[in-house]
Length: 607
Image (cartoon, rainbow, N blue to C red; front, side, top):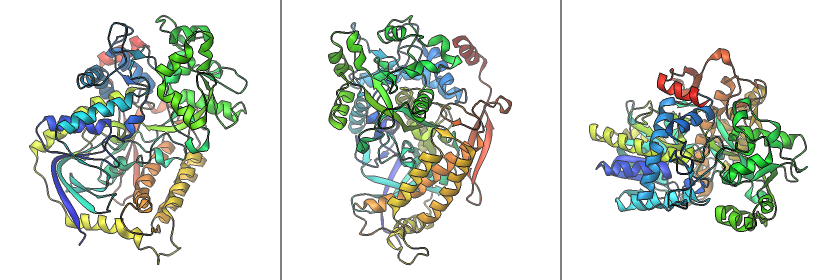
């Protein structure tokens, strides 16, 4: 029998980023016992890397903004495969989430008359992002963390969940281990909320930290919950490309929002070459018009650098493939050019973008106030994830909720910058509230000993790999080969033959993963930890590839070189992924329900 410690909570929240903290706070406010699990240390969640701001229609900079405009922008950016009810709730409730943060102590940048300042961002019609310089995510985590701690929420740091525990079809807890000692822990709960973030570590070049291994999506999938929109992986246009040690680290869209422009090695602003018809009436035709927009001229059209992320990323890839890229395989992002416009430009850049200034100065020895940055696309965000109910955030498995990046629906085929942080506030709050209601209405359920024993045996199998057929495998090598495969075959530009190759390669990697062996003991064993997340990475990689093969069109972040246009004959649909009765991965098309007439009118008016 495996030895483990048992903990009991009404609501268990797995993941301590913005969504997890907001869910835990809301559940605790409902009077139930809450346990919060961190994969690393509290305060180190990936939310701290969100730099640009929180998207909310406060209308502090331009009074023409409102929830209707934000809703229409989100739907248009998502190519109309979003869950429109989630987009409506998000647009309506985001301002309240920002004001709530402010009331809890968040220190936003201010307008001259004391209101929360908002900046321009790609895909948003008006200046909409409330920000704290370029450290907004850090301020959000600081504020939410302080509030959660004062509520007395129990926090389990450096704990990783291996499996969800089920009683019939219902989730009744989770089983995992702590990194420090390698001890097993059983968490008995009436309701579970997944807020584990994204899947970036399935790719070679990513802005995501080591924790982003698709844990929540894989846990939900193996518990019988449905996933949706897994083909939509966002590649942020601007990550660092040099030096190699920092390749993929994010360069915030705020650089472009403050006037940064993209140039190829010839010094030409290539984004003017390809402006989609959908955005032509909103996009500047000249550098001067774009400059006026970034300076706050509300009637000027925005620069093409602030088009949606999928479009900008593809334009950068086009320049690189055509041989017009920078020396290290990227393009140039230049904000130093505004020195010719403003005498105090250097100080303005340092004030508006302090993290970016220090990041490039310390990591690449580049002064962004005087010279351009080299940037290129980096795997950044997962629009797909656990399929949830718009109102409650409960998955298709009873007792299991999800919010934030590991849930799906709000962003559709492409997320607009800044919507991720307001997503955390709006749907983290809803997930916590409805999980507390579920916990109040249901008992604890029965934990199956056989499920716990099976999970423990699987976790320890990597220490006993000497006699396995075919020889032992290194977990690092399997993960490395998976990342190479996904980067090269299921990346920004996709083709059927390459994705079939990837699907077959994932099957071979899954077989190799059964032969992984690690040395040493269970205390802080990084090799063991890598071995334990391989199944999660392989599961989400297979889901991405199978869904991408099924969607035979280009839409948002999913671009098929062999199907470059939209498939109008197929109608609007989502792709749902679930585990079949024989453990095979099933993909089906799910028609999107017709939008409510009042929301349809809003979209038509905003076009």
